[in-house]
Length: 354
Image (cartoon, rainbow, N blue to C red; front, side):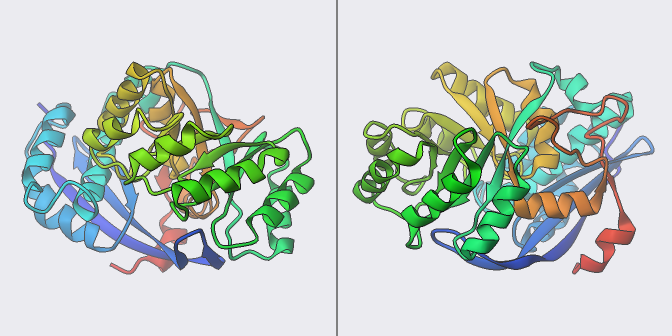
């Protein structure tokens, strides 16, 4: 037995490089809650993107539960954390906190064994395809074009829609990218089902392949209505915090999105991917590319991962070992244990707020 000896949480807030917006929200900063777990002389890393309150849940609710448990028994630790937050609720802040601790434990376990996490989990494929993601609705046409040109080596990219000028921005994206790049759009639940169907049909001549959250993820009937009426693949699931949420969506989408920083961590990510596989679906990793590189490689039905502008910017700044895409995909560094990441305190500390 190797007991978990400590759980620590820190909060970092990083301003965006310019104001950002999607179909339903505006923001100018991103908050990361970073968790370290300690056992056997090693430290594991995990994190979530959410309110600073996640750190209070980690320290006040979850640390007392997992400290003293065997670091190798992560399923037991996950079950104990889920029981602990029963009255707080599995979704939202408490669930995000569980995800950060659970992923940190997997990193710690792999480090103790001297293995890259993907080797501990077992690889289903050697590399993970990624798609460029940003194209915020707050961007001017010039900024949008600049970002798209910067992704010229990625074979697929996504822009946000849902705030007006949608068709003009989609046409601009297609003209900038040319015909050889797959074009995705994400409405973040901005439309009703009929509105989404109308906009999808109007985008058909631009060969849009992926329509993410045309309606809210809380509306599986609306998602199903859109999926059955349009050519583009419909995707949703990024807000799922338990298997019940993913089960509701498997009959309503073409590709299920899973976020390891929200769903409960690595084990729940794999379980959600299994639910999708049972329904004949592929899955896509939502945001946090540094965390998804290893877990997403462990399932055979993964389609790709999101190379999200904000998170790429933060994770490449905070961590040594953060990958760069090659030919539109990222691969694990098999010479580094765990997730292969080391926090650069000199670069991250100035953003720490707690």
